[in-house]
Length: 149
Image (cartoon, rainbow, N blue to C red; front, top):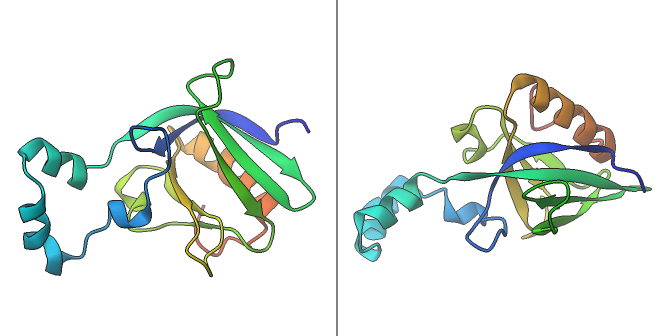
C-alpha cells in the first residue's frame, strides 16, 4: 500500500529505538524521594527527568482499519521500529502529561482499554503537526477526542 503520510517526527525512544513505556517518564510527586535513591548519578537523574526525543523518518501505512507507523533514521535507512496495530475506532491520539512536555507533542495509544504500547511523538513545526494530526485522525477516526488541533 502507498504511504498515507511520511516525514520526520520526533519520537521518545530508548537506546534500542523502542518506545518508552508511559511509566518511564511520568513519576508521581509522592515517590520522588524514593526515585532519587534508586538512581546513582546526576546524569541518570537528568536522563530520567528530561526525556529526549529522537528525530526519525516516519511512514504511516495500512488500509481497511489496520495501520502501522514505521520509523528509521531516513527514508532509505533500515527500519528501526514499527508501531503496529493502529486500529480505526480503537486507537487514540491523546495529549498526555508526557507529550505536553514537548512543543507539538502527542501520544499514539494502540488500545486505551488494555496495557498496550503507546508512542510519544512531537512534530517539528505547527504545519507538520497539523499534517500528521489530519492523517492520523483520518485513519484512526476517534473524532478528535484527545488532541485539540
